Length: 244
Ligand SMILES: *Cc1c(COP(=O)(O)O)cnc(C)c1O
Image (cartoon, rainbow, N blue to C red; front, side, top):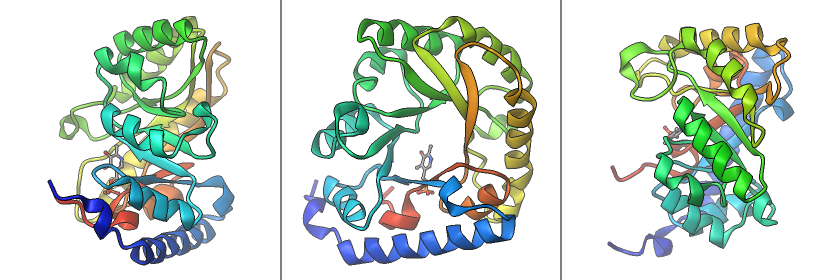
């Protein structure tokens, strides 16, 4: 593998970041929202630490990875708040139970809680390091098109069941919609997630306090903002095309 670190174009990253921020601002205006309500998470998977550092220099403070090993490597170079740094690391991808022990030492927010067994394992491992893990429940809003995520109908019962875990704090919902050309096609899925969120938000369940909606990526983040996203996860829009 070539060392991509030498090929990072910091000024291109800065320009793309400015453009994304401008589009966030405009989407917020259309939706009557403040842009301070929307956290831009730069998804740096497959890109080198130098790319993350370029985005950091341009003011970005939230970064996302979908693999534990890559998260571990990059967060060693630029530590998250949990490790006394000044960025937040988001684990946005599926987490296998045998990687929980390592993962929870590196991220600040976990976006992909999607099974009872994973919740139990996270709670158990977090207790051992005396940590309370903030997590979002991943919901599959597009049927069979997505491999991971809970069925929307199962979400309320699942959230009720998480009340028992004192080392897990469920702070919101997340979704990855089916990949489509036309971003308008994902609007119904985002709107469904928002509805689930609103319906559950008033429930008084211990260890569950829904505040965040993580939805929207490079192709569809404006629609997600219009539908109420508090976290958008943008990779290519900031870092450029990925080589896979
Ligand atoms: C890769 C990825 C993203 C970013 O996707 P882009 O299309 O590059 O913006 C967002 N969320 C998750 C879970 C991802 O795996």
